[in-house]
Length: 399
Image (cartoon, rainbow, N blue to C red; front, side, top):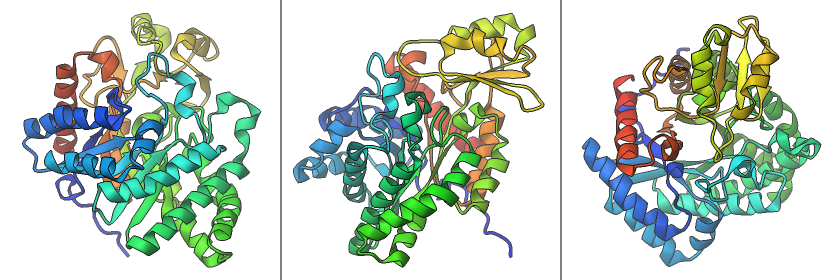
């Protein structure tokens, strides 16, 4: 039986941009930037509705426990014709702080704090959108750089199962579905499609379902259904490029493992091809190193050998371990329209196209661009707005 063809992007829930590019932690700050930037962006594009991948950290989550504050944020969204059918609950701390680095992954899914804030996002998501399904992207377990303690897959899976049970109870009350979308990322518990498939078939099927069952009054059928219906993946095309995965094959592997792909963040990574013969390109990549975000960096050969380092300031060590690398890439989100060899760098945009096409064929409908590095690439907000508009237009034009 043939699978249904994906709908054109124009017929899906509105595509959008991730608001993690804004330094907005309080609800007041977020409301102001939604009115000014997102509302202006929608008007600039001439769209009836604009999607916002609405990033909410711990401060905003706490403030939104007050019903009047939650209602005011919803009015801001409606006034400016913005659709918050997907939330970004990944970084809970200040994401545009002067230094973020590893803090982007704290607290992780081993912690009660991560579980509590993420459960609170269920009611917030349902209040901010009327969509039948809303999604929330989140940290993919923990960060391997935290050491051996980060490899507690059983605790991570159990907490995810508890979250799924809370989402199942919300669905009983509202007849609407909230899905938590773990976002595989370099150096994390879930980094590759192989990691995700193994976690879904192993720890999540065992410890996650057991915890969900316990939270749902011992109903094993309900526990298994909660995990199946309320947990999925946010497929970030930049991140899968850092793993040097064939993105169509990655989507096929996830689908075969019955992992729902419910959200796709479309971005690209900078790349230097044949770095041993392109010192100017290597220098241009090195120049992107900066103190705010982690830029995990990886080199690969055509035969599949990999060399990985935690940050871009370790680029030389990465290449020294693999002197005949065919390419080196870094976790630095660049715009979709980045021209080939701009500033001496190539781009993984062909990977991004393949990943988006495969996600859409898997019937993923929540799609956003996620160039949160505009604060570095274009510190003037007018340039960031122009660049974001251009990315969204690029996405529609390349459908």
